[in-house]
Image (cartoon, rainbow, N blue to C red):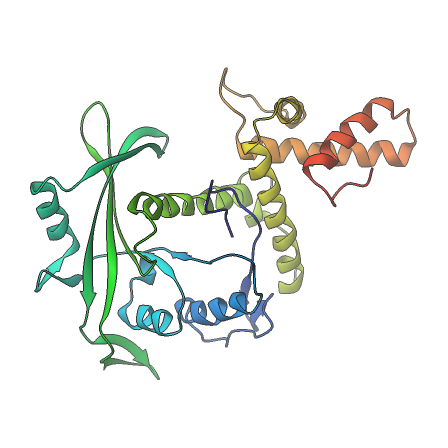
Length: 319
């Protein structure tokens, strides 16, 4: 779950781990061992709805979620979703056309407007957006008992938000997103595009797990349960590091510099510390504090650092 206002991570909500003996899960109902991961989305939506969280939830899903069958399921169940489209045709202005055709016509009509400056793949860009309503009224294809079936369904109307990122110097289009959503029209187009932009935080999550001091692919736990437990702890640590990374208070900046020093890694001059460096420094800090606790050394300075760490990581460090 991420904050819709600023994209900062809040917490992992649900996690499944597929093992040779089936799924392990934090959900009360474990998915069947042969369940496709897209088929797990609706039960997950239902589980989260049962938590009665004090907010409106929008489920942001990558291109694999561009499935007429599943979007009809989610819509019928009353869930809000935002899905990145892949190559398909939708009904627009009475004709069945591709997303790219809609984008080209909107471009010719001058419908795109500048939204915001963004960073994509480490490069600066300018995001432009346009929006139209499209209709999904064709039968869905869905595998049932191992066979692909044609399944008719109700017509649904969705908002199609097209967001493209352009290089401000060359004018080259760096990326184009076709975003399908049933979020009400009172939510601005710019907000829809921003929410999908926030979804890319998951890529930094994978980097933290694999390279940011965690080295997931080299873990040596020998059971699925042990791996799941470690994944849960590491996921929460990732969320903590992300929130610290975005904190611009003077105390946070000073603490981040301490973590950079403890990480033993180099940071480019005037560049903010990466999540990976903060993560490595945090692990070093924990080891150092644990060592000092066990040895009973003079802790006047370490207590001050521990107090600062506890402020940003409440519940993880006892002061």
